[in-house]
Image (cartoon, rainbow, N blue to C red; front, side, top):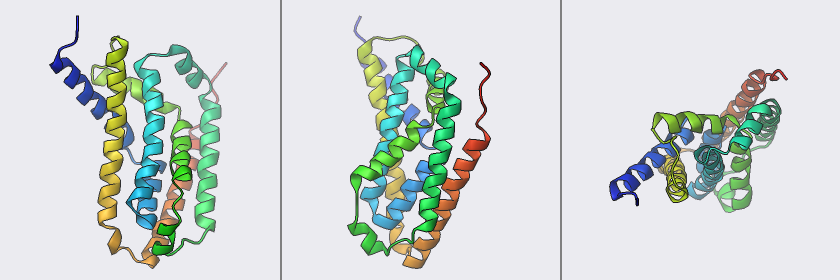
Length: 213
């Protein structure tokens, strides 16, 4: 029997809520998007958010379709993936802290969309606990039950839309405040961003534990 309009809209809105819940917690990607928005404008921050939303959607697809062999692999290899992710974060922090930030107008002219979204995509993808978070959120929003493929794809579309809604909102707010930042303030934001990302990397490594075989 075809799903009713109320069922479809309810599923879509709960998918959007799921995407927002997963994307919103403060983490390295949020720090990077804020820093890039201040330094180079709304486009750079939004493109960075798109990379994270794309990775979230991949994990959301795995959770929504209950692809058990992928989930089992991520749980089994979480040590190595977290180790790799922590090292990447510390490496990014080192680049941030060793590189002198450019003036805002100069930085704005040197946009590289590909590297912006690819870096945040990789960072989010190296956090395998995201798929476990999706499983928990889907259950909390009563979205964990089995449904046909079209409705599941609708749910996944909602997840992507919710994640992008968060990034549009965050980068839009930061961009509105961007004119209040001077080049000197940008340098402090740049350093603070590097330190924050490095701390996230260190915490990731400290929490990394080898699972018993």
